[in-house]
Length: 353
Ligand code: ADP
Image (cartoon, rainbow, N blue to C red; front, side):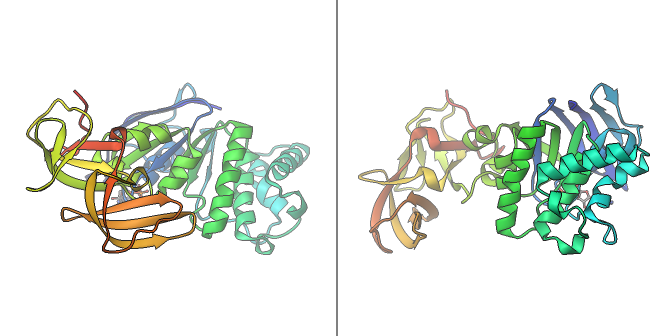
């Protein structure tokens, strides 16, 4: 396994810059997800690491080598794509060993590596089948097997689970995590799905419009989003947001009639801000923010309540069940630590005084 350094990488297509100077350091053995909405540049960045796209400026270093001018096949990486493109006329055994055969490895070694990978992936009994006789999940495992047999120093994954149905995606996600725990190969994983990024990775790189918004461990992003973008992107259901004004640097003026005590003190006063609070961090309380219940949606294990708070829509996610009804007047509250405050002029997190 190798570390990967991405240093001030820029990329333009037809004079339009789509990657605006990105720096990331991926440690040996680390699992890092690149996540962001469609078009933010994550696949382009991954393909530049793989050597499938040229770089306009900056450096990519794998291990101790600058690989900018090294061909993809010589970068010691293996890539798994969303479209796993197995050869339909070849058995699983041949599909998995194909790259090694091209590299002219001895048949005995190919056989051994294919068997080891098949064992890890639970594919041993399918080795003599053709891809059409496998399920979608098994085919995706073969695509991973093809990468594993090459014993690369870095795995690159480009949305590998997107073609699978929801149930299989969850199962393959935990298989992938187990695989990484077992092999500890440095992994860079592109996905638009924040849950996938959060559950799989040691660290997540959140991208927006060709730039990095924030890099951090999954729970660091969840607990301390540094921008409105990250706050809105990470977490499901989405964080609630309201615009207001910090008045005496401790409370938020939401409307003429309503002032919310935030329970903590900020350096700024008389400042336009956006406050955010996650639905799962709100509870029904004896006192707090006065709301009117609009919709109650029970799922058994939890209940989602949609309410109005001074003209704003507020979602509350309760564990378990509730007796509240649409039209009820209730109070909700959150611990001060769960209330995030962003400066309206920059959309960046506001820090405590
Ligand atoms: P993501 O993987 O996050 O969805 P991409 O890396 O595919 O985003 O694309 C980033 C940006 O680069 C987008 O604006 C996309 O339209 C543009 N882009 C990607 N590939 C090409 C290409 N071959 N030619 C021109 N523009 C491209």
